[in-house]
Length: 145
Ligand code: V0V
Image 1: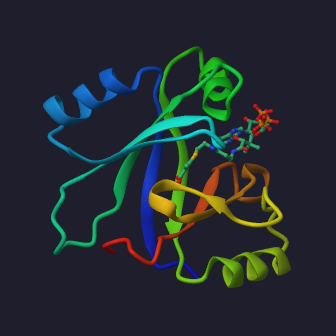
Image 2: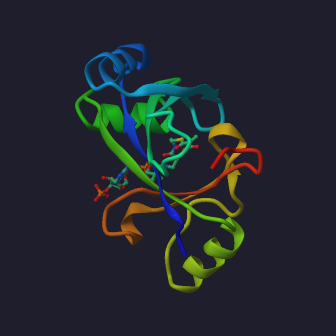
Image 3: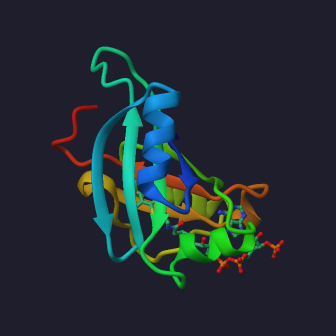
């Protein structure tokens, strides 16, 4: 069903501070940055940048507003960051969503939405996944992986 772990999403109160920590202290590289108004996030994807190795990335997610998903998550978490989601990569998101629905998993959207780098994304509600917000990612056809 799933190809690999695509990324782990960390909610962060401040994107620039988080990037500083994860690059200068932890040694990751910023591979990509974008804002996604629909999802209410400003985000950065971090990794080794080594195209020859299949690496899951770290996604830093900062809220665009207090009312956004990440804004609410941070408020509930006392303003501190933490792991907000686990994302699995898929080849055919429509087929995987149909299979998961058949198996009783609650998906958030009727149809996939647009995620990082033009990917197609869907989420499974934590109540039907054992408490973890699961994201499904079908990378854009132009993506390097
Ligand atoms: C809430 N809950 C979580 C959770 N968020 N459990 C695990 N992980 C999370 N991230 C639990 C919470 O503890 C409650 O459990 C229950 O779900 C309802 O919580 P709530 O605070 O009322 O939260 P809701 O219902 O307002 O929102 C939860 C959902 C929301 C999952 C519906 O986070 C959502 O729409 N997420 C999908 C979109 C998203 O995450 N976008 C930002 C990333 P109890 O207390 O009832 O037991 S954007 C992104 O990833 C992009 C662009 C990308 O990757 O490409």
